[in-house]
Length: 438
Ligand SMILES: Nc1ccn([C@@H]2O[C@H](COP(=O)(O)OP(=O)(O)OP(=O)(O)O)[C@@H](O)[C@H]2O)c(=O)n1
Ligand SMILES: [Mg+2]
Image 1 (cartoon, helix red, strand yellow):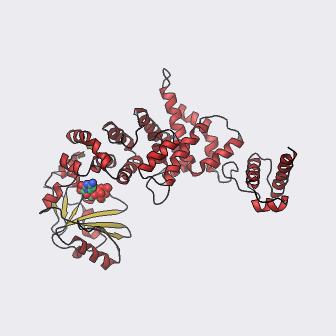
Image 2 (cartoon, protein in one colour; image 1 turned 90 degrees about the vertical axis):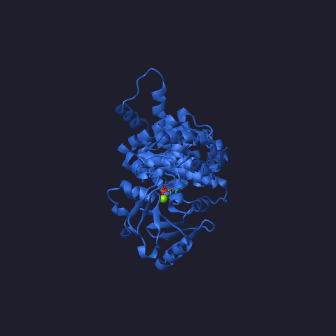
Image 3 (cartoon, rainbow, N blue to C red; image 1 turned 180 degrees about the vertical axis):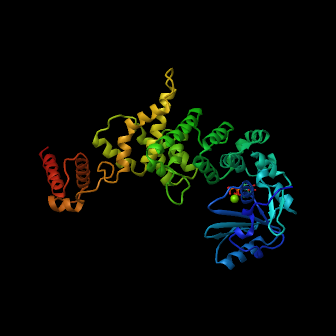
């Protein structure tokens, strides 16, 4: 018996009226699980199982609320209704009874149903008890094999829920690991994305790698790569302590429609092949977007420059130009790897947090401060003249030389040598004469 039905399951909190659901109909999956756990989410994601005519029901609800309607699978009768702050999926029951349907799911905690008409919890696999103990237990090895993405979902949900994977389940995952290659790369990428974004993710990515689930996608990942991941987490915490704004940027998404944060980009850079060209191939195969791939390869390419102390202003100018919005990911990676080199370099004791902080301030603080200051002319140049103005002032034809001159003016401005349009044009004239004199 279950003591109480959580109020978050109540139809009052749904985006549509219970009256529009036929009898019987069941709520299943993550929404039931999370409600029992008392987990709330900003964005509601509800799943319903209906014995028949699921698509028709979904269509009627969408029509009634003028909500979006997406037919997800005509054959299996699955449709989605998209509300402004929630989505609801309606699926035809699989098999002859709800119990059969629940037995086809991945983990027991995801196989609990709730009947909103009777307020009854239907739990044939004792998922409720596993929820209370924080355990992810497979329904059966055959179910994991049926949709091998479930192998990866186990680690992702363990991270998100703060659960452990029951030993026999983990053993089954390990023995089925090679099946992960059959899954569409895009679905795998989504799971990896959740793991990279989660604060507990590193521990579970490590388990997933140990159990053979990552090797098909990241051939170069080693034990050391995973130590680097943990170092990135620590570096991010350290940087956030000192520069809140930089920390916030690490949590931002690369692009709105993309699920990877800048911190995730730094972590991906630890998992991929360190050669940017080979990293690009790996990420492309996992269906990462161009923006994400560029983020990782830029961080990898620029990293060596951040390991040099005392960059000249000119070097800094070009560094910021190349890094652009990838700066936060690159710097967090540099801090992480620096700690790692220190930590792994033999008999010296590990740095204390205070020492690491001091080193961080010494080496990267000047660059971070420039990056965070919108008026800094090294990190954020504001052109004194345009190409067109140069063409007119110097009376020369358009050519790549103009671009080169603009760059040199930018560097001179960063170095404090020029600060007005007139000075910039005079400077360009000198450049012109110098090249003409050669
Ligand atoms: N590969 C999958 C995907 C989903 N499910 C079942 O379908 C439900 C809903 O799927 P989904 O919304 O993808 O996952 P949730 O468990 O709800 O988790 P979240 O929404 O947090 O991703 C799951 O709970 C599970 O019962 C499954 O068995 N196998
Ligand atoms: Mg869900």
